[in-house]
Structure formats: structure tokens, C-alpha cells
Image 1 (tube, rainbow, N blue to C red):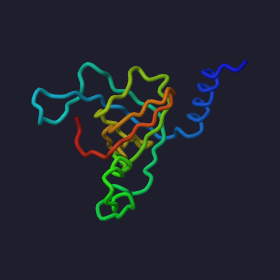
Image 2 (cartoon, rainbow, N blue to C red; image 1 turned 60 degrees about the horizontal axis):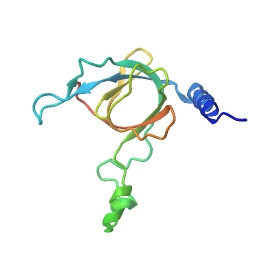
Image 3 (cartoon, rainbow, N blue to C red; image 1 turned 90 degrees about the vertical axis):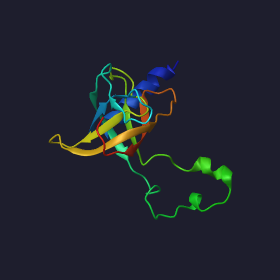
Image 4 (spheres, rainbow, N blue to C red; image 1 turned 30 degrees about the vertical axis):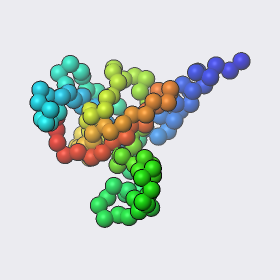
Amino acid sequence: MIDWNEALAATESTVAEVFDRESFRVVPTARRVGVNETRMADPDRVGFPFLGSIDFGPAVLTPGFSHPSTLTSNRDRSREMPSHEAVITALSTDWPEPVKVEDQIVWEGPAGEVKGRFLVAAIPVDGGKRLAIFVNRTKGKP
């Protein structure tokens, strides 16, 4: 009999070996005392590096770009509009702790240079250990 959990784990591991080639680093953040203050580095959580892949998809959020879903007058369609600029996918089985919404993820090049800095917008849960993390670019450091 097939153990579906083992089959899923093996599939996720194989996908990670093939696709996860980019280096990232999680920078945990926390709220400051004031509501309107920017987030700060979280002293209670430790950042960590991981390998993953990144996909930017169509330039839906680029100013001046007309996307069909933004040209409709139907208010119900607004739920279909994307709320993220890119998706970072990665296998999370070896992570010391989970990534949270509003944490930052730094995309690093081979020499350790910063290729991009992203703010986590959402992390949909589907039961697997391979996460799809919806992110938007950010310039600020926590």
C-alpha cells in the first residue's frame, strides 16, 4: 500500500533538488511600540539562509500596465487581482522556524551581494512542506 505522506515528501524533495538554485535569507521582523512605526528586526527569532526559486510572472503591478482584471467594473472580480509581485518557492523541512507575513526575505547572489529585498505578503497553506511565499519588493531594512 502506498504511504501518501512519504510519496509527497519524496516528490517535494525531488522538486527542491531540481528547481531550488537561488540563495535567500530570512530576516524576521516584529512590530514596534507605535502603530505607524516601521517594523524592526525581531530579537526573539533567528534569521536563516535557504535555497529556493523565484518567479515574477506577468508585470501586473507595474504602474501604467493595463491588465484585463483591472479594467472591469464588476466589484466581485477585485478578489481575483494579485496582491503580490513574485512567488518564492522552497522546501521548508529543515527550517528552524516558520516564516511569517511581514518578515523580509533577502535574495542573495553567488558572492553574497543583495539581488533583491522582499516583504512577505502571504503564505498559503496547502498541507505540504514546499511553501509558495507571495512577496513584494521593499527597499527598507528592518
